[in-house]
Length: 250
Image (cartoon, rainbow, N blue to C red; front, side):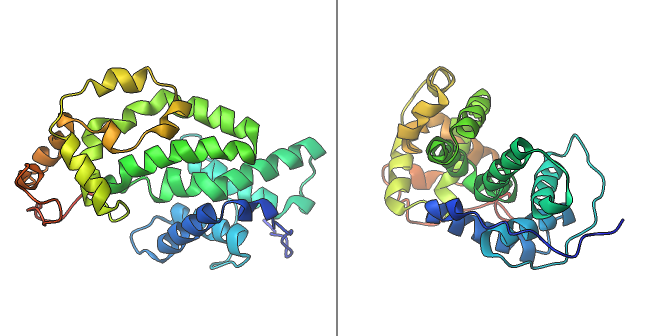
């Protein structure tokens, strides 16, 4: 298959509307493309996303391969590729506009939150809660995508279970003050499942990790054989707890 030599201009000024998203996505893609543990399809998504975000390709563009319906990443990869070679593809104005909107969503949020950072156990609750908040703010860029994605995400709020919040105590992104609040909430009994499942996703933008923490949040820690004595009133959250051999799951 012959690949076109020229790549279309994919610069979208809306990428700079939320600098924090752009910086976070560039950082996640850079780490992904440099990692030796990342699969080739992940690396390809990083390469294409970085081209949209920085204008530079880190690796040559690969020829089209299999399109697996079970692998949603393939859809993201081909959305970006078709957008890059749009002038070589016959499509209607409506299709072209839709392609631009989806590509923007992929590079700003989807590739980072749904793929490159999804496997980090200690960041799971932090990432999921912030994804809800980011999707809410995405309405300023595209209201249709915001509404659809937030509705879909609301079907999976069980990911924000109290169990995963406990692992956030070992996140490098959360401040010590926030961790102290989480530790304090682990001593409280709460029926968070009922609250979470009855709460609309767009209402979670006012929530914080401590508000999603309960006594059940230590369950994951004990299952991982982590010494939780540092959570006691006499303990100190800033101290280093005993962790299982091999470190935390990534």
